[in-house]
Image 1 (cartoon, one colour):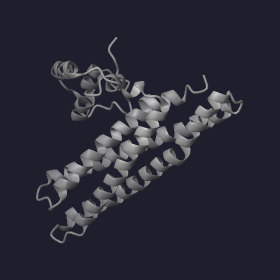
Image 2 (tube, rainbow, N blue to C red; image 1 turned 45 degrees about the vertical axis):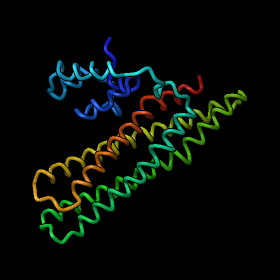
Image 3 (tube, rainbow, N blue to C red; image 1 turned 180 degrees about the vertical axis):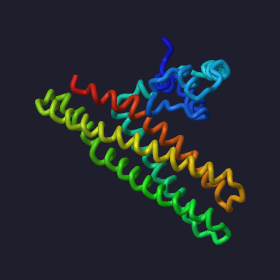
Length: 235
């Protein structure tokens, strides 16, 4: 039976670059197979399958995120993705503000950028709050559960139930952020197509693409590996 996108991204990490290239949603809705994803987008499955097979040939036997225990996953998310996203969100926001203050743009360009600035400011605030909720609430609760498991504490079941409710809220926030990122990206791409881009716009686009990839991998790890492990902690 063909593996789903989420499973492929876990077991063959190099496929993430392929999925990003064709904008396949392996991170939020990874239940599609590669063929189904191609059909949905009207893409040539045979061509993309050949690219996929080439990636498999270069895949080395290495530990995947599925092999990591919960503590290692938390350390990776906290130390790698949260820190990087905080930094690059600030960089992108400053670049947008610089463009908004560029006096060389016409009125239509300026209005588009002002709208982008508002949407991105909201996204930035939501994501920073989301990451803080994970760092300050979710992750300490998970570490406490690990400790209670060792002691076989009767408190375990109640705390796991609370964590599962929190995970549901975080999953919804992932979806909300994914949709908002896609909306901002669409506006940026349409803005780019108009031509006569102000200085600094290409740098903004490059940083946005870097952020988008990091965020996708971040929520892929959580949605497809960490959260399923959390939901089984009381078993």
